[in-house]
Amino acid sequence: IMQHIFTGPSTALGDDSRATRSCNASLHDMTTVEAEHIAYACIQARFTISNKNKWGEANGEFNNQAFYYNIIDFIHDCKDQDWAQGLLKWWNK
Image (cartoon, rainbow, N blue to C red; front, side, top):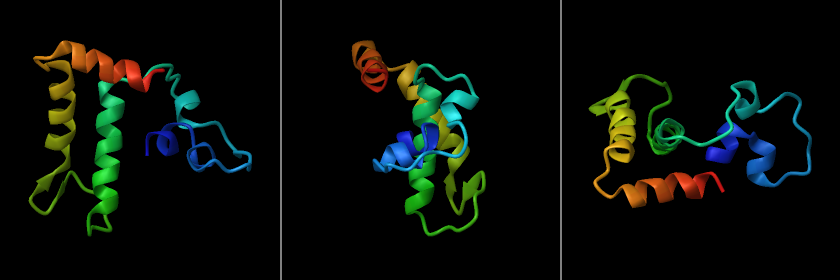
């Protein structure tokens, strides 16, 4: 999901096709993956497997905004900072 969102579907799926526009990472000058990017991908993954067909801050009883910020807070405030730094390092290799 991260590759699909930030570098485009062709890189995520391994297609030989060429993109017709710049990827989101280039458009937004993203050079590293941060906790916010991981949280955004988690929100997109959760929406994809939900039974909802319309995006909203909350889907039924599930609050997407709270989920997003909980992920960010978990990474930033993790008691095991070695794990948190390792997570970001892994995404940025």
